[in-house]
Image (cartoon, rainbow, N blue to C red; front, side):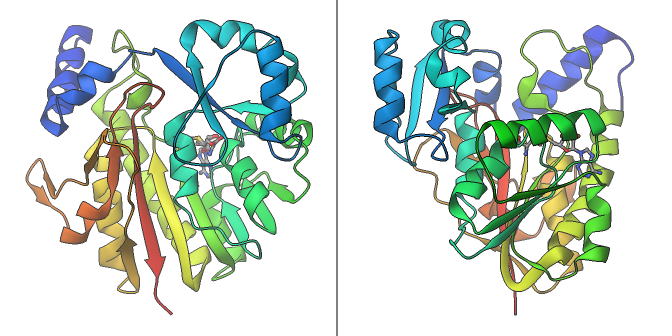
Length: 305
Ligand SMILES: C[S@@+](CC[C@H](N)C(=O)[O-])C[C@H]1O[C@@H](n2cnc3c(N)ncnc32)[C@H](O)[C@@H]1O
């Protein structure tokens, strides 16, 4: 049952998170590092690193992924004034987001749909790897900021659409080689102090929208294609339950494996608050907040021919 006062909302939030995994609470709000990647549209790693070193930054390379680096959080305010940043040679992005985008196996000939795209960080990753990207965002302000972002970072193969992602399947059924749905969510991973804007009504409202969006994402995908569903929230209603819903509705859908090259993650839950999920949901990944990783959930989904 929803609890009314702010104190009890906080209690409810913590109870739920503890039930998922108590390690999440340890990492929430503790930020010691931040991460960035090289924007290959504008520079090589060597060019960007030389500039950064000259400005007194000593980034540490992340052992997985391509040209990813971390720095202590104290450098975050200073780096945005550096040449490497203002000339868009680097892109500050959370490691969880970068990992999620990297689990979509994009081929150089692919046309990728990013169904909830602003501010565009993941579309920029796809644009370095795919032939073409379609980025969809309904919010006007976020849409224009995203367009500016693409231009500044030199991405020339991204088409942008200001529209509701739920309508895409109707105009482009079975169209895209790959689809990424970074769904709007209750953003629990960004709660780093008092619980002020969170409540269960919000979780349920997003869960409904997410189911509508995942249907559109899956129907926009070519048979034989692959998609990733992701959120920056912990609630199973917005994560496992959405995947379970898709698996039940589409017999041609299936979970594809994800192998994180780090240890701060857990498999998808098989039950929550009395609801049992399809056993395949175990193949999803919930990233636990730690170091330069914020909390994240992702599932890789295949569509049969
Ligand atoms: C988690 S953010 C996406 C972040 C982005 N993928 C990135 O990495 O930069 C979710 C986005 O979904 C957008 N959104 C909200 N409702 C939507 C809808 N019905 N269809 C498509 N996008 C929607 C939000 O405005 C927000 O920009």
